[in-house]
Image 1 (tube, rainbow, N blue to C red):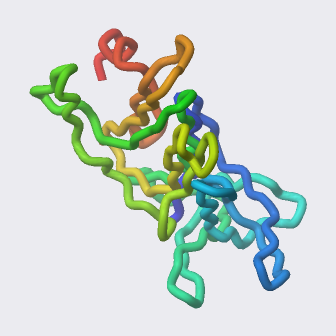
Image 2: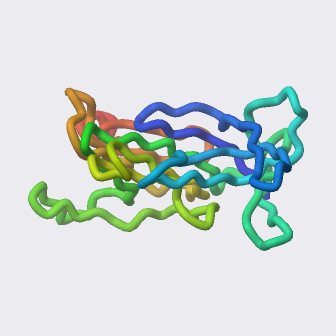
Length: 193
């Protein structure tokens, strides 16, 4: 199947995902999507991308393939042939001295003090999540970034801890089959989804 690709950057939705040139430890150069970062307390994870011209720096549609070692890779295509799922690159932020989480929607018996959420509904495409961090070895804060296959008509959420300086602490998302909706909890009450 060929899926549409989106980048979710803490409430901002972009069609497609940025593809970077990556030099592997053996000197081989490949194109890949990068999540996380390098450094103490951090972890950079990549998913290889094939089928783009050298001058193309974004992927909008992709088929999921496998490398010779059995890890996932993305094969660039010109259009999607399904609307049942999408590929999402989560470039999720953290607040100052904070963290983040990726979950499903609020449970029906949700209460602010318990914070019950359904599990994250995505199928992670990388072996491990990417990790971003603050401070020496991430001691001030850290959080995950993901690349995942997300199903249609299932609400999912990114939330951010730490000092956010007035920014929302969570965003909710839902793929309708034609549009990737996104809103804060208060906006969802108005939109009724």
